[in-house]
Image 1 (spheres, rainbow, N blue to C red):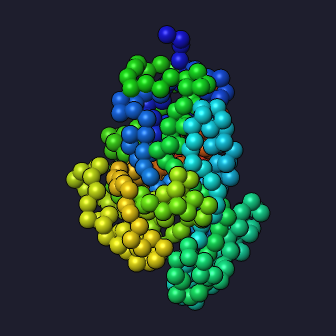
Image 2 (image 1 turned 120 degrees about the horizontal axis):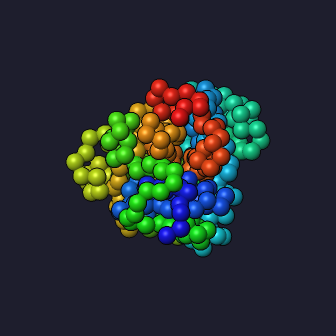
Length: 341
């Protein structure tokens, strides 16, 4: 077997994004996951690539902005090289405003977005138009941003795996470590190292075709139209759970609430139900860098993993292949400063 430069443990979106970034630079890469591609949280159904609110700016929000702006070219390249369809589209997001205080806050955030997003995207307060795909707004006003995008998590992760293979990499269910080793093993990997835990989420796929419509954010729930003529709704956030992969009455409650808030969903048929556990680092930010044993970690993309993945891959490739450390301080392992390892 050819000598490997990089071994990635974990075939979720972070692990495959790292492998893809390394393979594009000519590195010999293998990805190993006993459960296969997209077996964990990256095999989900929602896929909302939505930004943090444009206020109280910090490194995490700046990193996310850069990654979201990279996403269109990133997923187009993945699709072209590997032949898979990640289901990406940047169609924006709409959310209702409850009252005048919410309207004023949203307008202040619009001014912040104008400065912080530097013309790459907009955050606007607009009047409700009653077009049938807007959630009812008690104030009569909505927030509409042009930065939010969608991707189909399961298809996107598999498209990344296909692109890695097309660049000469290997995607395996077993094998020995070789070269630099990157741990991207999801919530179980965080828990094993005492760096975080898992938060279960449940979501549903509905038989409604709104493929050219923006995503909605209603009562803390993402409503995301996909290019296959379905709409994904979710997800719950459950700290306590017994079974990682089963759905229950908590998803039923979520569906009831979102149907009541969004008449367009009405009695639309539920095509599929999904449950999985997402990796949440203790810091709530992704964890990137070098571990004390000399291996590396790229984990903890809780709720924002797909949005962060394009830049996570590049930053980790810089570190692995060039020794160049441009990891944000907020993403570092506990007790580590720049240049650790």
